[in-house]
Image (cartoon, rainbow, N blue to C red; front, side, top):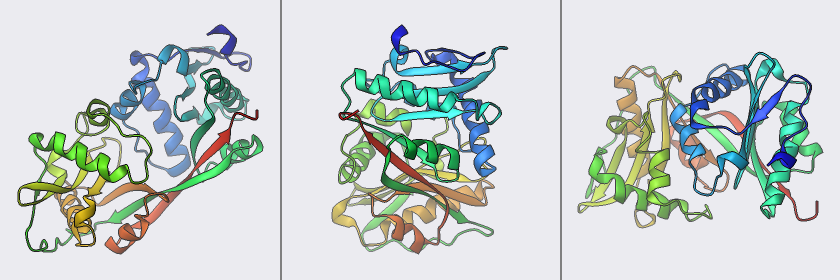
Length: 305
């Protein structure tokens, strides 16, 4: 909508994002991650899944910003949460503040009570900008890493538990398992199609590096992994164990299976993300993972302006 187009610095122009922008968006996000962390986990499949989230209207809820010669300089989108990325070469020119204004205006237009954004703690400028605009800490997120200079040992499963690699016929049952587990702290359940776009239908999904646990033929645990082409190590996207089978070492066992599978494919580390609402940090630390970086999920209330 024209009245919501941001007032950008001179020389920049904005338009809504389209599916044709995915490649350029991937390069933008990857460059931002490398500038902050020296490595990237950006994945075109994940960006495509975000662009297809139910309820997101790309023509109204997304922006891509180009410079005078047509290079992608920044992007933003807002729905239940928002994201703003400015290419390192285009920082300190007011793009981030302009896109943050736009995201808040769009959220207000659709009647949102608040707006949420996740920012790496290493991005001090972005953190300071959000705090100056009245954003408050909601949760903390951590990236955990497991180093694998040698092949990880895999313990024996508990009595009655069978572990094997993920199969295509596991997809529907794994969706229910994961969403049931995540519903204990995540307010919104994903339907199968949205969940699959972020997991088993992503081009980078690695079923041979994913593992499921079964008891009496019933799925009770799953670790779903991605083979991210630009990442140095393996990546675990989802970890879930049925509440009736927790505290039996199943999550640790499944992670070890995934770690070993990545090691056999030449990866010498493996990472995953968790946050403070899940209560899972201690589990991952006991497995031998260490915190590699952290991010803060910020929220701003919009009803009071």
